[in-house]
Each structure stands twice: as structure tokens, then as C-alpha cells.
Amino acid sequence: MRRAVIAFTAFLGGLVFLLSSPAWADGEALKGTLQNQGQPVNGVKISVAGEDGNPVGDATTGADGKWEVPVPKAGKYKVTLDQSTLPKDVGLKFQNRATLDVQVYEGSERNVLFALAPAGKQGEGAAQTSDSSSFWDRVAQLTFEGFNLGLIIALAAMGLSLVFGTTGLTNFAHGELLTFGAMCAYFFNVVLGLPLIWAAVISVVIGGAFGYTQDRFFWGVLRRRGSSLVAMMIISIGLALFLRYVFLFFFGGEGAPFADYNAQPGIQVGPISAAPKNFIAMGIELAVLIVVGLALLKTRVGKAARAVADNPALAASSGINVDGVIRIIWTVGGAVASLAGVMLGLSQNVSYQMGFQILLLVFAGVTLGGLGTAFGALVGSIVVGLFIQLSTVVVPTELKTVGALLVLILVMLFRPQGILGRRERIG
Image (cartoon, rainbow, N blue to C red):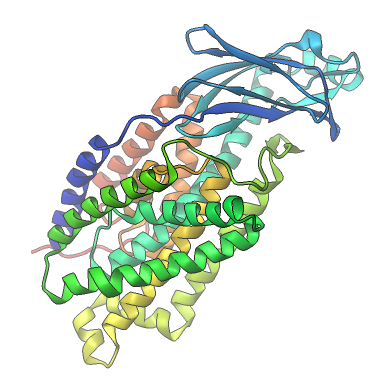
């Protein structure tokens, strides 16, 4: 019953948290790289219009095949490739995809990919491409994007779920750990000039230290003083707002990209088109999730963490240092959240509220998978990421997050403990 009350209160707190969101930040843009069989295509005109059809701007690809059009705000835009400006030996792989509907998020520069093919191979085949083939190609692309988003959510959700499992705390400041990690990497990469790989490693270490420090000097003190979980949850909302505006003060309201791996040309793998960094990032994310999961199952610290999550009093009586285990969990959670922030910054610009923007999806993944279960957080996050992207096949892009939360509500109605959660006796 206690956890049900906490979950309901967390939902109400989330509504308050959402209403406190500041206005959209500047720095949005559409960009891309045109290539034919690995070679850049020069002199192609790209036009961008708003959802209402009003022109926003246009650009022409350079010698490197790159183009970019800034947009005034986040929203949905129509991006059109002028086929008359293509070289004679090059054409669109799919003729019905000369105009793409693209959603630009706050502070992000969205990559737009047009699939090109040699005119001799493209002409007849593209003319015969059926609507069914185009539909399944789009489903494959959205499935890939869903897995990409789901793994980023899972990295953040795992730390949040571990903290909840060992302490019962619903931490609304967890999103700021993502922002902190991304900004640390930005500082070392852009300001100090370190390669992004080393900047990310340093960011993960600092993020782990930040998580440890939070529990050592803040949350641990509140626990020892007997603060209730509801009070601590409300405090986490205040801490999140405080940290968010500290980030705004030092970083500014405009989003900015990392110095490395920015605007990579896309590669085609079957029906899927994505930048190489997306494939590498997904591999890293999956590897980290597997390592953390195995550590929970196989190591002494992992077994102690599971014991604390099951029954803290019994774990303490059997000789387990409960506070020490919780601090390790906070350290791991902070480190993994920082890595999630770096990965999120790779797919969009780094901004002061990037963690807040994804926090609701993280809560959805944790709750859907099962509160307090690390593997449940992974499964729930993948489901949320896939549903968010695939739902755009049948619903407008603006409603895809709402659809994910609708699925969450339905699952909670029929399986309140989540996908991998355990039933608890009430009363």
C-alpha cells in the first residue's frame, strides 16, 4: 500500500513538475548530408516549410554534400528535395519521399536523410515501388529509432530504478544527472578540446562522484533524520528545479552540439538509414546495461543490493552495511545517468533541460518494467521507445509521447506490478 501511495503521489508531483517547464529554447535546425554510393552530391536544393506550408528557408548542398536550415522554433516541418537540381545520373531511391515530415525538438538539430540511388538502377525500380514496400521500410526505420531511444531511456531508468529499489525514493532530480553528465562532457570536449571519447569517460567518473556526494551529504542525512519518502520526493522536485536553473545560469538557454561526431553522413543498412555514431552508441549502451545487470546477479555487492531492496532491516541484521550499499548504488546510478546524458547529447544538442525533457519517459519505462527492478527498467524502456516511434505510423508526431503514456496506463490497469515486477499483498 505504501508503494502505491508513493507512486500516485509521484504522478501528481510529475504533473506539477511538468507545469514548471520553461519556454522553448533557441538553436533548432534541420540538416543533413546527401550521398550517392558513398560520394557527396553537390548543388542540390533543399527547402523547408512549416506545417502550415509557409516557407522557412532553403539551402544548397556544398562540395561535402552537407546542408543546414535553421528553424525559428521546435515543431513539425516539411523538408523537400528539389529533384530537378539532382545530377542526371542520380535520383531518389523512393520517388514518394521527396518531401519528408520531420519533428524538431527543443534545442536540437535534426538530421534529415534522403536515400539516393544511381538513375539507371533507381528509375524503373522506384517507379514500381509500392505503397506497401514504402510502409514497411518506414516501419523498419522507426523500429531502429525506437531501439535507439529505448536504450538511452534504459540507461537513465536503470539508475533511477536501483535507487528506488534500495531506498524507496522517487527521485525527480534524476533527469538533472543526465544533464550534468552531458554538460561535463561538453566542457571537456568543446571548451578544453579533449576528444569526446575521453570527455565521456571523465564525465562518467564525475557523474558517479556526484551521485555518491548527493547520498553522502544530502539524501543519507535526510534518511538518518527519519524524513518520510513523500517529503523526500517533494524535496527532489525542488532540487531538480534548483539544478536546472543552475545549469541555465552557467550554460545558457541555447542548445549546443559536441565538437566531435557532429552531422555525420548517414549510411544505408537495408531499409535503415542512420549515422555511424548511432550504431556505435547503441552497442555501448547495450554493453553497459548487460554489464550492470550481470554485476547485480553475480557480484557480492549486487547480491547485497538485492538483499537491501528486498528487506533493509533483515539485510542489516545479517551484517550488510546498508548505507554503504546505497551509496554504491547512487554512485553507479550517477555514472550510468551521466553516460545516458552523453548519448542523448550525441543525438541532439546539449541543453540545460535535456534531462527534464526525457524524465517522464524514464519514469514510464521504470513503472512499465516494474518498480525497483533493473531488468524491468530495461524491458520497460525498450517498450516505451519502440511504441513512441512506431506510433507515428498511425498518429501525428506530436502525440507519440501521449500514446506511450496511454500504454503505461493500460498496463498498470491490468498488471499493476509492471512487466517484470512481483505482486505484493496489500492489507
